[in-house]
Length: 59
Image 1: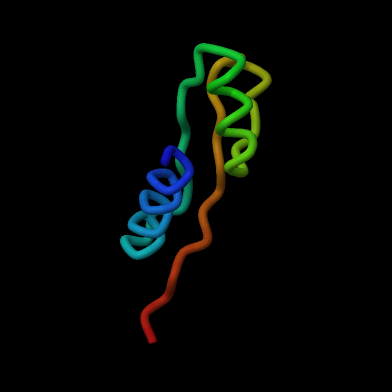
Image 2: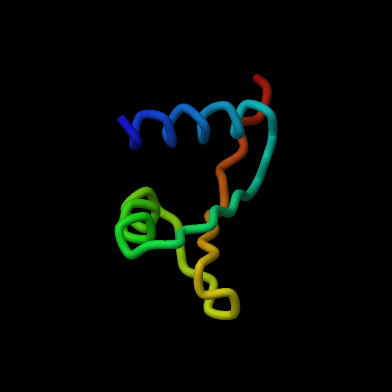
């Protein structure tokens, strides 16, 4: 269910031209989940993970 929600969020962001996103993961389980969704840990923050988004261009 969580993965489906994240995928839906990413699809909406791409459609709106949003190019990056970050999340705060305050547990090892949350961090593992977001890493499985393609996010990378921010070495400076420790609990912040980010992901560059592919932006859909209008046809």
